[in-house]
Length: 85
Image (tube, rainbow, N blue to C red):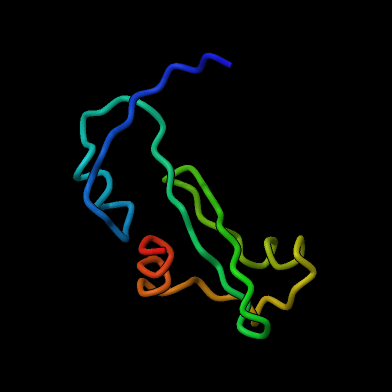
């Protein structure tokens, strides 16, 4: 596959607002990556969404056959650990 792309480097950010500040004026799709963790067995799920969409945690839990109350958004330190691996 010959897919044309442009790599845009930016500082590490934790909110979509910070991303938009850094890439303002660049044409293209903007996405956000969420890490959801299961508090019982410590599984982690990486979810990529358009920047202007919200994750429906109830629907996501249903797909995974998990209890909604067992799923949490990962904290910044988890993102840092994943990046530093």
